[in-house]
Amino acid sequence: MQFFIDFYSQYGRFIVFIHVISAVIWIGGMIVIKFIVLPALETIHDTKLKLSRILQIMQRLLNFMIIFIVSLAITGIFMNLGHDFRHSLPSLYMLVHIKEAVWTLMAINFVYIYRKRNSAEREFVSGDDEGSAESIFTISNYLLPLNIFLGFVAVYFGIILRGL
Ligand code: HEM
Image (cartoon, rainbow, N blue to C red; front, side):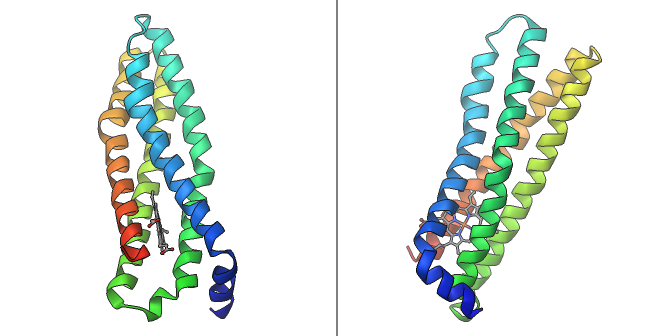
């Protein structure tokens, strides 16, 4: 435990930096897919071209996010141990656990989005354009908004943990 406290007192600024940047990229990436990429691609009339572009861009963005999702959890745990929240106010320690739970929900939802995109691609390849579009609709209208909302909750709890 002392190791984490010493490590955090030396590299805390860097760890918080990685934590915040990872949150920005994960949440920002989802916002960009939902509010920028998908509406822009909706204007393509050729259904096959539209679906293939959406699937390709989603795959690149989802793969890109994985490293930041992992680094959020690792830096979060370093921050928790470095601050020694276990021996601070019980309400703050509980909030750390709530953040861990929120991260877990977001990660499960991310895996679900990932698999849904894969099944949308399989449907597209097998010629089922309607099924593919439906899977993308589910991602865009339910799964991404849920994760964006959970991301905002995690950021808000982070600010409370900071002491504000
Ligand atoms: C394993 C899960 C997580 C743990 C244990 C955790 C832990 C923490 C802790 C202890 C702080 C306070 C840092 C400080 O006072 O210096 C913090 C801040 C923060 N967290 Fe997390 N976190 C987790 C997940 C997340 C997630 C999923 C997001 C967003 C997607 C997030 C976004 C933030 C942000 C933006 C801050 C900075 C707030 C500020 O600058 O005031 N965290 N987190």
